[in-house]
Image (tube, rainbow, N blue to C red; front, side, top):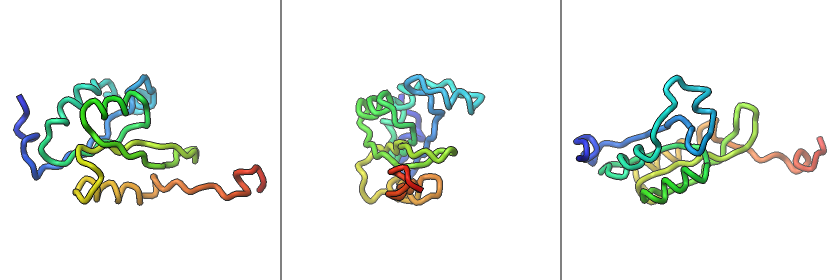
Length: 128
């Protein structure tokens, strides 16, 4: 049975679960309650009538879960606390178009945490 709140179209969901899918350890290291069933989370959210957005680490297992449950994926460039450029995934239940979830995605991409600046040509070549 689908919970009532999932059937409510005006309700939007933003979920940022601990990054433990595919054996990642950051979520276990950072959160007291890090053990979740990622497949069950996707099972539950694929039935939502409203907009859904999840953020996850870019891992094959996460991409597979999203595809299996009919979600759309967009890689988002970000910088770690050590200034390493990497990608996280924004996952939505609607194609990336003009929806409230995608407006949130646009704001997410503009936030300082996710603004991954390219290194200058000199820095990339080991000069300066």
